[in-house]
Image 1 (tube, rainbow, N blue to C red):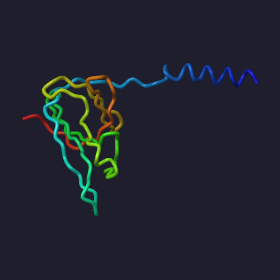
Image 2: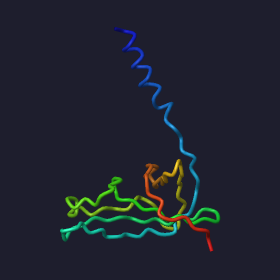
Image 3: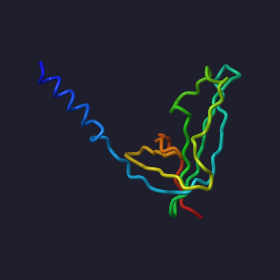
Image 4: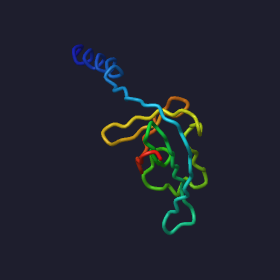
Length: 122
């Protein structure tokens, strides 16, 4: 009985060490835009935020619903959504892993976002 408990305890203690560190890059946050998304058959809606990031000779446009909502949440319409805690014209950390895009906000929290566009800088 002690062996399974000991194994479980060791696994729980080792889990943070197994967590994968992201390959963070640094870019410049050029803009944050808000888009109102209406819910079909309702006058309420939700907000989606678009972030424009410059890094080297590339410009990325990414978007997300707060709390990673894929479908607009009309039940939250009375509670306005807020963009990520980021500073426009400031440095922003981002990572791209296996087709997924992550931002790190000013408080150090990871935010999974959707890559909308990748373009060469003019």
